[in-house]
Image (cartoon, rainbow, N blue to C red):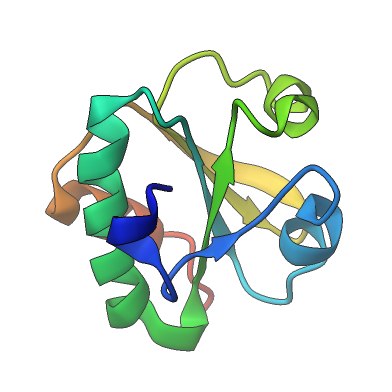
Length: 115
């Protein structure tokens, strides 16, 4: 995600780190597939940074630059930006394509928490 919006709150993942960071995660992970040229991606990244603080350790948020990491982008058939995929136990369990209000994102992600 653009550096000014997420800095320490969202972990950057790459094709090389995706499996270890996302697929092997013990908690659900929201992956933000973004691109520098995508204006709606900037708005979504602000929401995700705020939600990362709200959810704390219960849900992990990561960002993947789709232009720089085409292998993972192709593997998950991401065709539009932004795309948010929710992974649990290494499997995609939810997706959101396009920009959405923060409350919509919060409610969507909360459904994927255990307990």
